[in-house]
Image (cartoon, rainbow, N blue to C red; front, side, top):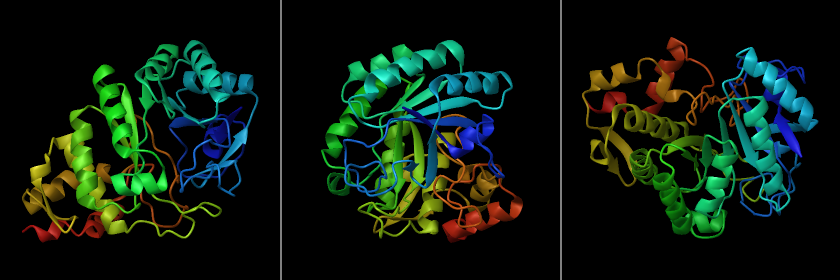
Length: 320
């Protein structure tokens, strides 16, 4: 079973949707009803949320051949730059995802990222061999203590698999982290420095509470914290900043070892606040409602938006 996000279906001409920011990546979901029980996820075993949801996005099932045909047309018309497949962890989806990957490679030809709970390097190799250009091994939860509580299992085992995969398949591995699940800023930034050194692409998400999940009443992350994480990520990945360039107090980023005017200049184009992830991924409104607080901008920012985002970080004027 293959589903499309509402925005993807719109770009492919399979659904009508009013949007100011169409996706630049086609987002697909294989399967529904996960065998895992992540406390934040609509697909979790014990979630009461509609299984047509993932985060706050609605997903719709279409015929597989129609999806392939329309993706091929969209690729030829340069409407999309990439495909991204989220594979729900069920036994039946393993063969489907591999077969579907082969079809995408043969008939569509766009670079494809697969986000799946792989448990070995052999599984990573199988997905890459089938046509994926990147495999996402999602950490999601940054705090090792909270990881066991929220996702189950061992953070350290998962992270070690991520490290081994990054070394075995350099430039082919991605991960996701979710801000707002009990971690502090120092933990996130330390991890980002390590991931950058491993050449792992990192998608950063804001926690989004969903009705029917275990964390339905958990608050969204503070926007100031999120902006500081975005700025740190931008400086780490684009300007090679190291952990010792960041100054913390009780786990909070309070300063950066750079002149105030230079930092303002680095942030002046707003790129730090755009969606972070694989190349050409903009995930429109994945974590937010149009008209509300925008954590990840799916487009270039206006001057006033850049100014607001910089001010929200409370960093720029604290390091005179």
